[in-house]
Length: 451
Image 1 (tube, rainbow, N blue to C red):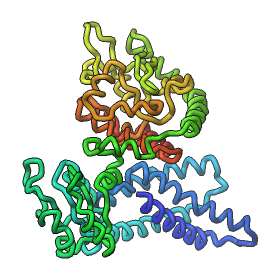
Image 2 (image 1 turned 90 degrees about the vertical axis):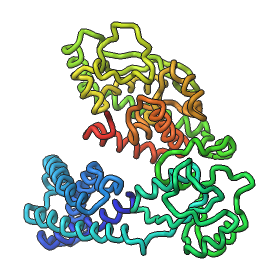
Image 3 (image 1 turned 120 degrees about the horizontal axis):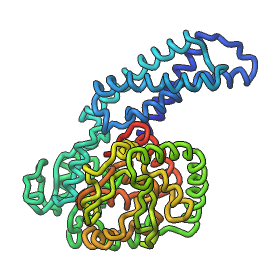
């Protein structure tokens, strides 16, 4: 996604700059004139990049074909023009003129359509794909196969599987089983493999190390299946992880300096957020009170940093439960009790705004795993491997699991979210947090990713 965004952004800027120059024909007498021209030319491409990003035009998992891209392009351009109109209202002096603007839009369409058409053609040409040989027939191997099939733009083409087993979890292999691990060198030569992905369920005493070293010496890339799965999905395959992986992985060792910097950034951002959103929260509180006589806020005990409990604050989105019931994770989304205002608040994630107070108090950070109900932590720790690792950082107002997965109401869904949480903890950084916040804005604006 980043490469597509960068290449198309540069191409759009160059095309619009040339178009504005032809239409306006400015006298470039000094560097200020050049800077003014570049500023005028940069506004429309910048609006396009923002609009295209929020319409998923850079996500090839969403726009998987050229026809889907073409259909979304008009919608993206409409959003871009709205952003441009807002900018021109604030800074009318930066306007390049109607003729230059119309021509620039036409140039953008004429440029993007052939670029993407060629891109989709290349993606689907096997001649440009790496020939991938997978070692293993277990659950991790199956997941990697599924992810490769779902991502043709990654240019991986599976040519076969090598393992001593004949079946994959009781199911027939979707790809040819080419032979046992001891014949790996011969198999790699026959299929002309460009990559070998090691996804063995049990490696002890089975790893064909000599053959893998020979393959590397011949220029074949050898990848660890865990790392490949992590790269493809943005989550960790917890079933395939060993305790030694966690012990020796530097990503799970957070220094006090890292945690302190996160705390300072979260505190400043939350304080500013409270000031900016105070009028909106007042309107939300009034709407909740007009619809229901229940309290405006919902306060519940959650597990925080290192498992310590704290009182989480949210806007109330459900009517009070009159009958006694265990509000566990498997019952948390009782559709019959969600209010009309609450349904919109949940869709736009605005029910989470009062948690800015929790961030200021130090219970939470701006970004991190979502805080879980205290009564469910013990149960999930027993059911989900390594679940306690969620608490090595403060929980967050938003998180990687939230922008990638959404709500969870079953053990399978909770486990899937935990895979994302572990990936975040392992890879967390300032820039990763910034990406999550940008994606959160997309959910708030468009209601995507929420139920």
